Structure formats: structure tokens, C-alpha cells
Image 1 (cartoon, rainbow, N blue to C red):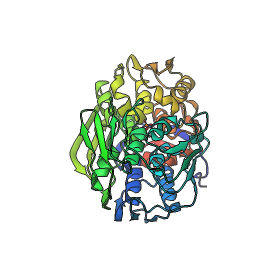
Image 2: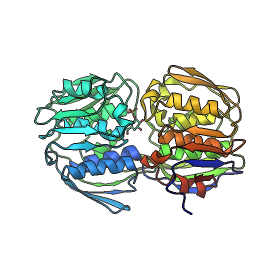
Image 3: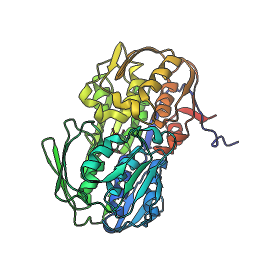
Image 4: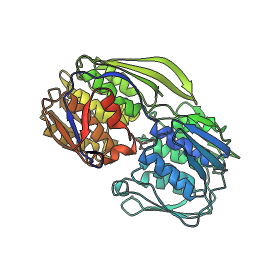
Length: 437
Ligand code: S3P
């Protein structure tokens, strides 16, 4: 009987995690490739695109605005309509669970000739949007959300967007990218000041489409664009997805894995630095650039970990890996402290609360902080975890199940498909005893 209709995971302990695996395409880079290809002149071809629910939502939204996008799975062919070629009549655009799509597209849609309304699923409808609304209004966009600062967002078309100089009050690549996309249409030069680095995929992707930003110190400048030029993009494997198996190999005895073609952009891979400072045996080899992004083969082996204070400046560049880093910390000798991570509270779930609740259910000692937590290393008991419909919580606790004293059941894992549709298959391939129940 196929259990694939079920959405709970059951994980039993494994003796070792061994082998080579390919990790699906990077979610952030896949979104950006579609967005820029849609508004470029000419055809773009995107390889190793992430076929996840979030990135498919981005494709659907552009199809609704008249862009011809052919998804053959192996390759996506986008017939770009040019910067001013999107067409729709007051559409309601549904972004599902994808915060990245709705925030990036708000910048782009603010500069179109038509009005639009942006909605999402129950989780996305609760997430904060004022962070993008305020600066876009400063750019002369007519954009509003609810009084609570949430979706639906309403955008009035036909505005003349103007450049601004803006210091990011939150270390968010989604906010930065939203403003860079609006900046493509803004009269003058938009200047963004970023005091702590966040992922720079939009900046790199713009260069692929022949419109470079200028980075001087902590200032990023973008000029109004005349045109973007379609191109070929190869999307690297998603480091955030690789992170689960890196930790699986580190925590499990007699383990050794190789993950090929993984994106290792320095604004994404701080998790390696954090794990190494805890004592992990992780190495990058065959480092190279592909479509402007650093890519490598990652080797990870069984290691003994010691707890650390996670440096706060690394939090924005390890933001999506923090749940799995915490899963590792719970097996380290001594205490690990995470602070400066309030942003985790406004992800697909309140990730600080989801992790605390999970740790308590599995018998790990934790102390809650407003902006993080302190974890004391121990051993996981078996138990039942609620993922709160959050893909990263579901995948992080799946890894805890490999080394727990008894099986772990994780409820409500449907949203794993937003970022890693083949998670179960890849996990099984590497020797993890996981299945749907
Ligand atoms: C993303 C940026 C991050 C990250 C999200 C993807 C992106 O969000 O958590 O999964 O693609 O720009 P913030 O920029 O809000 O921190």
C-alpha cells in the first residue's frame, strides 16, 4: 500500500548514513531566475530548477500575467516579455506558502501599469509585510496591507516609482531584493544600505541578466534598467536542503556522505563555519562558479560536537539552517546558546517556539530566550512532534529521529514539498529509516 497520501513522517534510528546524493535546486535562486527571466528580453533557459510548491507558485503567478513558461522538469524555458510586458487586469495572485515570492514580487508589481491583489495560505496570511510596504511607499508606490501588517496586499498600478536611499532596518534578503526589483523601474539610482550581510542571490542573478548592481562597502546601488537580457541559468543544489544530511552524517556513528553540486555562496553557508567551530568534520571540495554562484562538493563525516555561543553576526547568513543547527546542538557536549534570532519567530512558523516545543517533547533540556534559546546537550527520546506546518521544522526533527532512543513521529509534514519535494527519497537513499505514516 502506498503511504504517500499521508503527511506524517515516522523515523527510526539508523546505524549509519552513507553515500552520495544530489540535492534539488536552490529555492532562492530558482525564484530569482524565473522573476528576472520573465521580465527580460528574449528566451531564458533554467536548468536544475527547484520543482517545489513555492517556486511553482512563482511560475504560476507569472503565467497569470501573460508570460509563456514551459516547465519540462529538466529545463524551464521562459519567453521573457520585457520590463514593461507583463499583462493582467487587476489579478488576485495567490502565493501559497511562499514568503519569498510575495515579498520580491511586491517590489516588481508596484511598478506595473495594472493593479493587483496578493494573497497566500493561512501561514503566509499571518506573516509581516509592513517591512516591504513602508519603503515601497517611500518609492511612491501605492501599496497597502491590513492594519495588522499582513496580507492581502493591494497595489495600485500606473505609479511613477522613484529611487530612494534606504538603510535596511531588518537583516532580510527578501526586503533587500524587493527594493532592488522596484529599483529596476525607479527614476534615478536606488541605494540600499545593509549593515549585516544577507544572501546576495538577487545581485548575482541581475548580473546574469546583464544589469549589474554596484556594491561599495555596505551600500548596494541599482540604476533604472533599460532592459534585461535573457540567458541560461544553472541552479545549484540548495545548501539549506543539504544541511539536513550534513548534520545527519555528523551525528550518526560510522557515517560519511558526499553531496555534489551544492551552492556554497558565502552569504548562505555560515552553517559550515558554525558546525566546524563545534568540532564537525565537514569539507568543501571542487569549488567553482556556476551562473555566478559558488558551487562545491560537500563531504561530511561522523564527528563529536561541543556546544558554542553561535555568533550573532552569523544568524542572518545561517537563518534557514538554524533549526537543523539546533538539532545538532542538542547532541553536543555542553551548552549552545542562540541569540539575536528574533526573525525566526516570523518564519513559516514561530521557529523558536516550534523548536522549543519539539525539544521538550523529546526530553532535551532547553531554556527559552526572547531571541533564541540555550540548549543543553543530551540524548533524544522518541516521541511525537508537531511541525506546525513548517517544512524546516519537519525536516530538522526528522534528523533527530536517526539518533533518538525510540522512533519519532512528526505530524503535518505536507509543506516539506515547498522546498524539498524528494526529501523522503533522498533520506532513504542515504540510509535514513523514514517513511510516511
Ligand atoms: C530568502 C530569504 C530569507 C530566508 C527565506 C528565503 C530569500 O528570508 O529565510 O527562506 O530567498 O530571499 P528573510 O530575507 O526574510 O530573512
